[in-house]
Image (cartoon, rainbow, N blue to C red):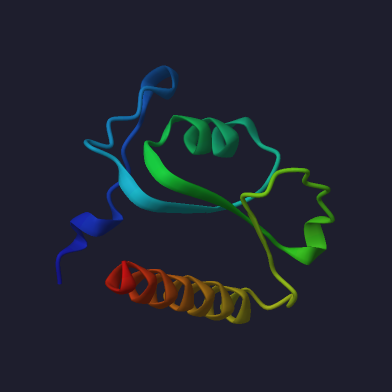
Length: 97
């Protein structure tokens, strides 16, 4: 097994080198500075906060996925099913144009 996947990297002063960026970036929301800094600095076409009900956040943003379940596994299954459906619908739309 390649254990290097568990290595951590330190980013000084929020300088995050993520190359070209990502199509999607998902992050569970908490109010700590480290989480917010990473979310802000990552290059991505679409960034989404994952809002778990037990945190009782009040977002005004539209880039939030609100979990209905208190079980994180159910939340992620539902989130990725939603993303998959969106991608299928979008690709079908593109094939018609």
